[in-house]
Length: 304
Length: 325
Image (cartoon, rainbow over all chains, first blue to last red; front, side, top):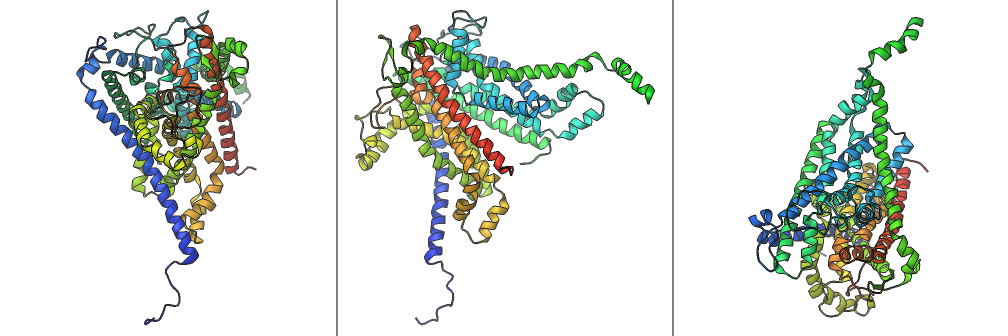
């Protein structure tokens, strides 16, 4: 003790030291958790990219499956099938979703709007396999077909199942963006003597176009990767490129699912390549949607 | 004034075009029908699934829920271990995912510097966009072997004396444990992004007041943030749970599709959704198809309850935040 001890030590001791330590540990835990989640994503994308790129070549996109036991071949029928399925699903879900959203945010009384929103959320929470079973029971395996193409699996049935998945997503996204449209735009339109339906179609909808596009893009990204709804509705298909919606068609997610359980390394490699194509498609569309969303918000004069 | 009130309706009738007069009503009806269709779909799904399951419900009654057999040639079906498997994998996954998601939410809302926030948040959300079949593929060829060779021996050497962590048969890659990890990865983005929004919604003044009074950041989280968003976090976890309960593809790829369930999580198992998915080509007899739909009906009931519960909590929570009592 040569130097005189300071009257008050600025070093944390005892209780405050423990408090700071606990704080440090909690911060560390939260940071580690985020690192684990991001790490998992990176590991996943890395292995898909490594294994997928190996198996990717021009034949993959242009040729049909190879004859059993032979090397080579591609997944052109599955690519075309996925395109067809998602196209049908979008054609059904987009108009109905947008119209339902217009009803909720422009026409419905508050209580009804809440009810519609609630049931759309319930629909969104249904497991996708159950939706597949529903469409299967509705128009694939029925004694009296309810929908015209009934009685067998078809691209139409698969597209319908995907549309049911997309509907609540499109509707929810559209509702949110319609609510962002400033009321003074509507009022200005009314003040000019424009009727309500014209205001909705010519002022509200064009203003929220970007947001609707975002919601639809996200829904497409989701539908493109869905496998479960297709299992019972559009799974058993021929090996050729087929544009006929009344036929059952192949699809990329189902190809991955089937090949992933195959012992044949060539088929497994094809599954990885399919996964790579799918993941690139999904991530690119999601990021585009995010970009579109930011831009449309800026256009509406809103900032995050 | 008087003249105007007499002539106005007639004049309006002439000046407004036909389209304008009926346009509002037409658009109102069309949009209402579209909204109605969305609501009707929900009930149509419930109705159609129960109608499809009816032959099996008539054949097996509620014994289906307690019986444990799946023998297609003998037409014997029961769902006990499938229900158990569904609950075990989903709750197990949420046991891991809930604390991780809350921690990620806290990191993104309170800790991370602004430059890190955006990119990390986007990355976590991108995890949600990865299709389940891709997660399953990765689960089969990367995660399952890794678990079998490293995680399982490690865990069972420490915790092996507890039956559920006991070492399974050697070199079994498809396990309930792997399914849990896959489900954890799939639920984290949902739960953590809701948690982040909740934590960001806590008024800054409250947080600053707490820090100003000398609380550490952790104490501020514990005493200010956690109490004000508790209900929302519970709802976020239930929403994640709903996703885990209904996941068919990824689980069916990694779980091994085997009943009866063993006691250890390092053994194969099966879930409701995964059993339905796994049988899509094998179901031939009407009773077997109906039994599969019965499984879907049970799954529907379970997820329906968990979703309504989550929405109840969210609603009450929003109500409280709006200042109601």
